[in-house]
Image 1: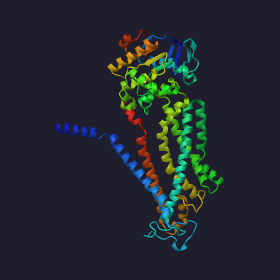
Image 2 (image 1 turned 45 degrees about the vertical axis):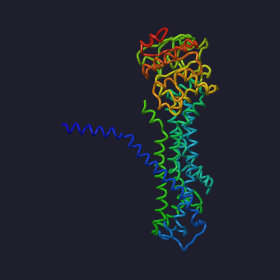
Image 3 (image 1 turned 45 degrees about the horizontal axis):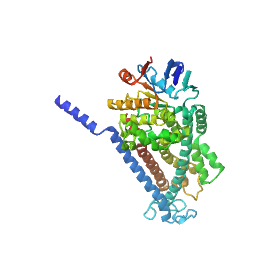
Image 4 (image 1 turned 180 degrees about the vertical axis):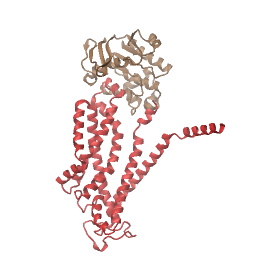
Length: 299
Length: 211
């Protein structure tokens, strides 16, 4: 019996010693650090590697066509005889650029839309949200294809087609956050203190949603990479001489049937690593940027 | 005079929380408002500081009938009634320092933020505390900042909605002392809401009951 009580006590002590929250926080921090590190390495490689080697994407060299991975070509070569390592990272550079632009544009657009809609409330809010529903009702890819088809082979058309279809998610998240914020007593206190609507939006609501918006932006990044990939894969994205992960995978379709597995595997692995790194970054960032948890614990 | 006449208001359609309530506060006077929890004390407080539009009834401030509430009321009218809420932790933006919290009404109305020091001294906040954020101070200290914020624009009326419910005895005494000084020095009309009858007996000039 005494043993049982002692065991219970020591179990209680060890629970008290390692609070669940701290444990999870530590893991999220590790994920965040891995995400930041991974993303930095990928970005550095995407920026530096293509300019280090000789890569002319407008030339075809049948002599070095579809060579298996070796020390000279660690990722092998593609159907046009270009080094796949250089071409994959050049592609990642374009994909990341497109994705970052899309994420930034949709986040700013969505945050403003959501914040204004939530702050106004009433019928303007209902009207603006029905507009969001209307954009959402059309499949993203379909709407994107229409936009891209109007301006073929243009980098900005690809950016616009993704950004204009993805701001709605951010708008919804931000609006929900603003709706919950504006019911809090500190907003009442600000109104009572003579703050205007614009001042409350600028001083209290927008700073409070920066965390949510930043996380949405980071989560949009891999999604935008995938969207660009999908558009390019369908032949609607970027022109063939401008390598992107999507373009490379489109060309790889035929080569992989001839047994050249590397043309699919290496660019795909880069895509998956980018996705994992950014979602890790988002998880770590959320923990740092949302101070609510900390201050609400003190209630 | 701040007077509520026949106020009917609630949060859900057809379920009034207050059903025909009258209350008058004259400048310099401290009116206590007592009643069990859930009887609508805070709801009446919100109506009086122009944060909640009544369904029926009339609110008059210094002879003027109030028609707009929240942002529909001009800032000059809203700031004529100061308010201190029950839970200081919910009543402040967790991102701002105490200095920024107290300075907010000053800046929002075009006054220099330099007035913060005087206000902080008045409620007993020392300089170093002003640089901290809400989660780094106690409830009592935070409530002092909230009181300083409410007094920043020298309101003619002050609504203290359970101001002392979350703080210890010494902070209660300090907060009440500051409000009483304000009432006598600046002729501020005070509505002191509390469920603590003993406190209202020593604080208020007269006590009204709800519910």
